[in-house]
Image (cartoon, rainbow, N blue to C red; front, side, top):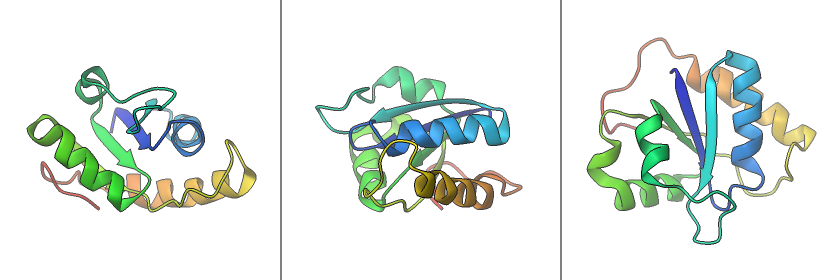
Length: 118
């Protein structure tokens, strides 16, 4: 779980908030990116190479990630946090939700096999 990459649509609200929360919660390296063409920080190959764990906000983003990056994400732990796109950056409700989901999802003892999702 050393390097955790958070992905949402535009990398403006959920994924940067998650990266901040996770870095404080777990004292790990985090980064964030978006899948949309107009994302503030567009997902690229360097993000994928860097990440040990990739956490997306929605199931549709997990499907899109698998379609776009296929074999490149093999060996990565994939997690879907199921966080809807209804929050602002660092909104207290979003921070609380992410805190709960990250503690429950990312602290599982054993990493998943390549290509699996939670």
